[in-house]
Amino acid sequence: MPKLTVTNAQIFYDDSIEAVRDVSFMVPPGKVITILGANGSGKSTLLKAISGILKPEKGALVAGSIQFGDEDLSVTPSDEIVRQGIVHVPEGRRLFVNLTVEENLIMGGATRSRADRAQSLERVYTVFPDLVDHRQRIAGYLSGGQQQMVAIGRALMSHPSLLMLDEPSLGLAPKIVEQIFEVIARLPAEQGIAILLVEQNASLALSVADYGYVLERGRVAFDGTAEALASSSEIQEFYLGMSATDTKRSMREVKHYRRRKRWLS
Figure 1 (cartoon, helix red, strand yellow):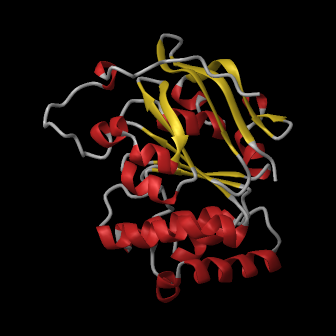
Figure 2 (cartoon, one colour):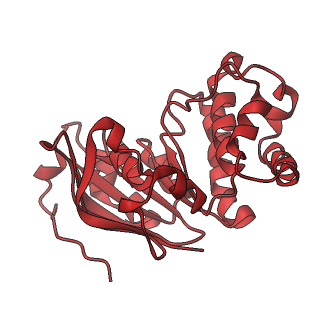
């Protein structure tokens, strides 16, 4: 399985607004890597850059590189990136709301053979058994949690090597979030895929991740194993809501907050 490597990425919108500056990280095969940070920190922009879908929003990678194995994703069309095994589940799910659950899922396996699509459907229904009784329902009438299951299931239909999830917990009830994150935790071992998880709920993300990167204002402020980040006093204060005082501060005000240029060997 290829490894995703982002090295010193700098991304601008409209040639004037810097969204990401000098960001480096990697996603090894079979691992769950999470990118944490507040709104506007550059998390979703990074996923769009990896997926090759920045151009419609007048965004561009102006420096650095994005490699998936030997493939340079910065010059690879978005449809070819999917064929390379990278599938992006965007924030908001974006289903075909007038199609049934099963029709949505089949759309995700459009590049597979008919026999393979049938096997993939059964695999998705095994991962998300709640969808079995709704397979002929119009997707637009599903609950938010069911729609998120369909969105992830649709991505799994193409047998990805790397699954990118953007805010999968957004707007969902706690019980549904728990179900979805149980699936996220199982997928690498069960299906041999890597997961790049963008999430504002730091505690939840770190509970399933192997390694994490924390973005602030388009830069990596912290990185480390999920266990180390979860136990970090800075992460506890600013992202897990566990401040010893109730004073809200920017992470810039933390005494040991350091910015450093990251190079990946």
